[in-house]
Length: 192
Length: 192
DNA sequence: GGGAAACATGGTCATTTGACCACAATTTCA
DNA sequence: TGAAATTGTGGTCAAATGACCATGTTTCCC
Image (cartoon, rainbow over all chains, first blue to last red; front, top):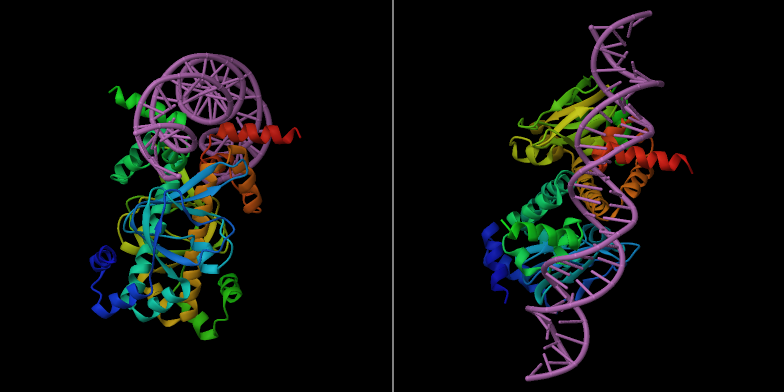
């Protein structure tokens, strides 16, 4: 169960057995059915989330009811609504499972204790924050500068394996284009 | 000169006189002419930048030569290329003055020493990183979900005073729309 | 296993957007 | 100050995109 998470941790820093034990002992394991929600708009994001298996999606709904996907979180990635988690205020975003998934959760107070007690975890956490910033920049640049076709290409090239596991309408939502446009792009590509 | 920066600092935390002195003593003051560059693509971002007066723009250029503005930095804001600064690798982005500007610069090693010696500065720095993440999320959501008109409205409403100081083509670049579309939006609004 | 839901694709059409061009007004700075 | 560059606006046209609808297929899960 937890072994894949431990492998993940060890690949980033060499934690001692007791540190690993400590981190895992405070984790809550949970299984999510397809489309099951883990955080809904208006709720407070009380946990850090690590995906062991499956894919989560992080999305917002807007006035007309449409969904906009901010992020996909496949195996071995973390997710949460940062702002809601930091400030413990109602979230603007939703987190739900794309497919049947296994996740680990840490309550905020527990995780903060771990961060304080395990410097290597703190370092890892900051590293993840930095990467989040870098990739957000890239994403913004991409939405500003790339054509729909380029966005799709980029997505396929940078998220290996992911596109095949996602329904097209979610990919379209993530890329900010219509399902129709995405279908057209794929059609054009298949004839080359 | 430095007084407006000191006022800024004091508004976020109560630094002692010697801390203020220390922070200011390592700052390099610089004046930038309109359109003068502070960081060019391919260079390493060696400084933290604080804008005392004027506006900087942070942009990327793409294959066809067009510019895409990621961020404007007016008075009392910080800027840099985070990834280039953190890793001291060549930057993908450019930073230049929109109008005649006054900035303060800190070399990375100096700033790191300040962060280590002045916990309140460290706290402020982390707070700014958090806000960066929150606003990046908002920006991504906006590019995904808003119409050009909504994007413009949002920009005008959330950046008071800024639009009036920017040429329209830069606003268009920031919003990811063409100058033509922006002109049309403004035209339509003026007839209501 | 089978009924229901979700999904991928395609057609048509109206709308939006961008590209290209010209021109007048404003601003810049040498 | 005055010439040159920048800026804002508008016209026209073609292309890209989205909305809406229908259909056949696949997937899900009871």
